[in-house]
Image 1 (tube, rainbow, N blue to C red):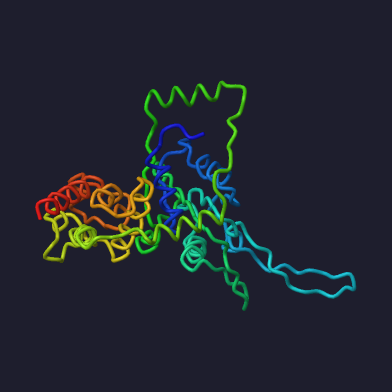
Image 2 (tube, rainbow, N blue to C red; image 1 turned 30 degrees about the vertical axis):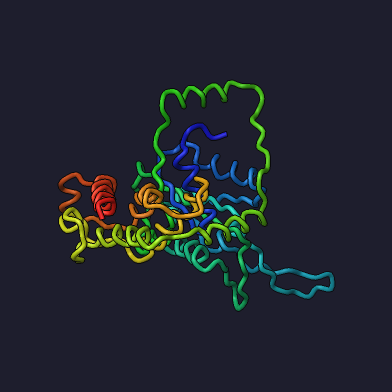
Length: 308
């Protein structure tokens, strides 16, 4: 159903099995909505889509209290769940909503609960929010604050397909028959796989590599890379180190191994850290991006790990 975009598909699956959430950034029409809708059908999970707009209110996401009239005329309040009550939630163009609405979604993501009045409602597991951002239209948008970006396990950049992939996409558009999606897993199996991921072994030297990557982004640390001292205002938080290990474990299991390797951590490092560093003015003036800086830092830390 999805042509190409293997890194995006793997990243979303890693976040689902790690119990985290994912932020996708890319222009419209690259298959972000199709990906999550297809994933819901393949995994037999409940799917909902929220189109973020400036007039969207928190109650439109989490739900609200409704007045219900009984046959006898008595009235009572009943909670009407919002679209957040699903296993896979697509938060489309999250940067178009106001900070108040964004915070309602992020609270549900963090706590896995929704509170209405004095009652707390649990969200069903597995629970994954895939938020998307459109990078080309910034007018009238509310970019997510860095502290809230940190709540996403990974940030994945969705790029244009190659010429060959674009040809396959057009071929499928011309076909008369629609591609049929078969269910390959269900909710209980996903939760079982999630528990297996937590048993993947992490050797001390691999853990040290993940910690060294995070420390290398923190400009005030003695282990900081020279580019971090020059261009990074704030480095990754401890959540970055946790995410490197969590995501790396799932990737190791996807590769058929029951132990985490340095290469697993290196492979997912950019997606885990790119939204956890804040660049300074010099970086923007010199045309630096999180991609260019992280690429150099990851390569240097990896080389040091191989030597030691």
